[in-house]
Length: 73
Image 1 (tube, rainbow, N blue to C red):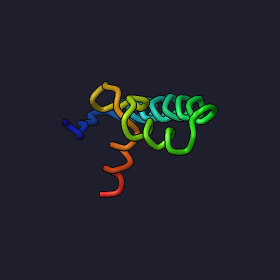
Image 2 (image 1 turned 60 degrees about the vertical axis):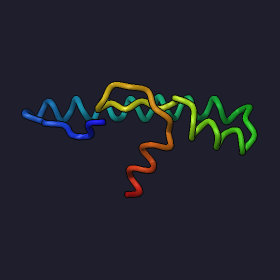
Image 3 (image 1 turned 45 degrees about the horizontal axis):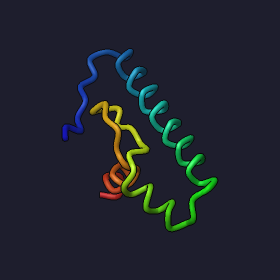
Image 4 (image 1 turned 180 degrees about the vertical axis):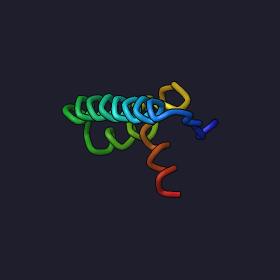
């Protein structure tokens, strides 16, 4: 998995930030939807294993646990 980006212009930064915001918003909405009917344990399971997040760098769906784990390191 490549977690590096190369930004050559200021516009690239704005685009990347917007992609990141959009990804976070989408994950937030999915998480809120799941939270309505899931038990606490089901919610934790879905955060860890379901593809409810989106990695804007690699343009792929992912679980929400992966980016949280990367932030902790």
